[in-house]
Length: 317
Image (cartoon, rainbow, N blue to C red; front, side, top):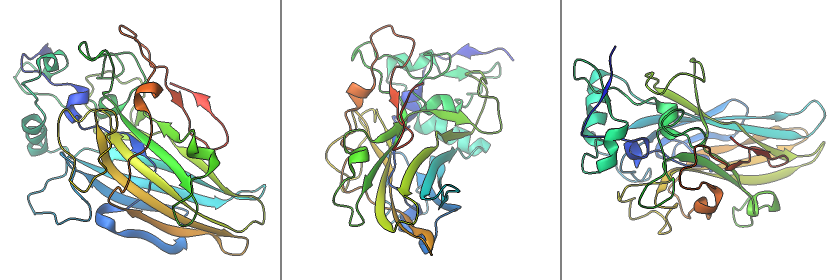
């Protein structure tokens, strides 16, 4: 199939102004509780992503159509060597009927932005093609080859990405752990699901999965309680407004797409139990995204530090 670039334009950061940075604060769609005093191993929390974002504690009309559907997956269990740990990941799925494709095209065209035409792709029958979803959200990778985003020629920055960020708190959610206070867990990598990771830019893929995060909850035979806060953000909202109930501080030029809390309780006899819920974000991530994204004009590679565990750190991508 022969492809050509349209003059009306569309970009990964654009398709969002919508993608997001995922900060770990766990939750369920519209405030539902996924687990309440139940074992957290295998818990899931479904949520919707709207554009512009909608307050999950507000009232949704029947016509409020989600742009994407998400699931936060939690695995928390005791380890063979003793102690307990929690593993978390977010999977995003795009509704993919023909009507959904037209909805995306209509709502996210951003034809008034001149550079959008660099990645807006049509087929020989003049049908607009879906953007590959993992490429749409990720930051690591070569521009226009492994990801849609790129250096803004006017701002000289690259804020076209979604990310997940996690912070640990005491059981009341007031005092942050030293493990994440100065270096929260954070990643902006999104991977294909049931498709090769090297699938090319224009392959139509509707599902993207974040990196997996690991949090150590307790040592052997310990009793402990705590809370994880998780944010899903997109770093460029393209001027769109977040709900008035959202924190006033932005996430770079973007904002929060979803926010969650995970309350957990570990005991030698009861294992790991807790509750997972989506909630209205009460505070921003408090993260310096501009400093984290170390890129220079013309750079083809991302040099951000990816931190996936509260005990170890690896450098990404």
